[in-house]
Length: 313
Image (tube, rainbow, N blue to C red; front, side, top):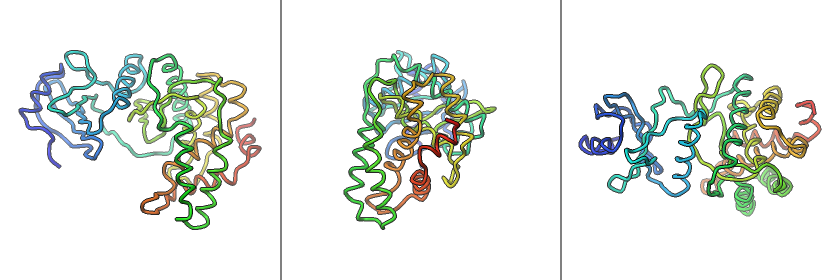
């Protein structure tokens, strides 16, 4: 992979920032259809330059929200503003963002311990509180209607798969219609994929929340999607003690309503089904994701009483 800019080009780009003078190009960390990311060294240190190949109002909104939350001491990376105060720079039709360089950044999902689960849930609740009053445009990705439409599409093409997978798809299609949150419940901005693959920890505390994508809906559809963190990395085990800790920590930071407490199982079910809608099957290649398969099979064998017994309700 080659540097995306010449030395003269990167010098011109850095002239629009207050982060020092160019010293050298370092590792290319990402290069796909969505973006190009590379570490840049200046005389002030290391910075992560991201060139956004896909750029729209939703991506811009996510960049702005991440910056605003950082300013409120939320654990996320710093976004460096241009000299004229913008979160991105348009340079020769390339949209560029400079972020704090995070050493040893890993994008891998990992098993969280109980202390990490506690802070993981607490930070999500804090995110919901901080963003509730923000003026943000709604997106569709990750919303209830978006997930239901995805399941509708998969259901129509279920005959592409064997009987076991067809049964699971039918289960998702049947259950999703019952997982509707009343509009009067807590409405906030949601992260959509707040999971261990998008969070870094230090000393059992959340250090960075990364890879932002934000929308608006009832918190019900967001916080319990994050309960998938209570599964093992290979999705073959579920840890009730982590689930109890997650619920307790979230409730300490933002008190759940009576309806939310009564419908914890339903919200957990939505979270598992949501990831299934995204990743269980590939309609083009007809491949089945074994991790999502394990998770959905676990859910199908779990009833509300068993779930409530696990969390002592």
